Image 1: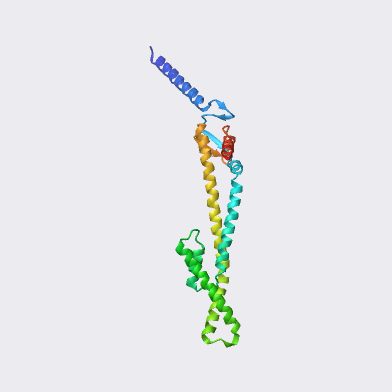
Image 2: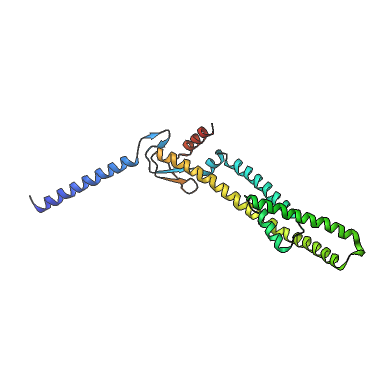
Length: 224
């Protein structure tokens, strides 16, 4: 057998192996289609915007937004209701009002500081009623109380702005948690279908392996 014959036979064998590999590869990439989805396909696509809407997340986020608005307004009202505090007392009081969970000791302290402001408010009314008969000490107290309220009035816009920013951060965190839960459901469906990678339909131009409806079916079952 000549060298050329060996070469030709070798080329033929290599071609056969390549051809078989191509067929096996094609077989792996073209699994049986079931329910419009390629079972075993390694890449899938999902419309996350549609999933997010169908899941009811927009309503949950809206409800959470209203709850956070009410909570923020309650805190702002609580701060505004105690204007007669010194700078140090005011800082402590605002800090207590900003806490989402207070210890019993902190709740008692908050109530005491509000009571102190109320006491000074009543004292201020009494001082204002005396008008020109105030002593030097009383005049000093009157100026202090008036200044304390003026300082808080000037600070309230910044405090309100901080409350809005905090509300936005908490709302975004809540929305993120909703998306994480939806991604977990997407992961479950993808694993069941043998899909290794799932792309959002906004980032993948085309895919025959769309598992959006399967996820919606799972969401509907969970809702029942």
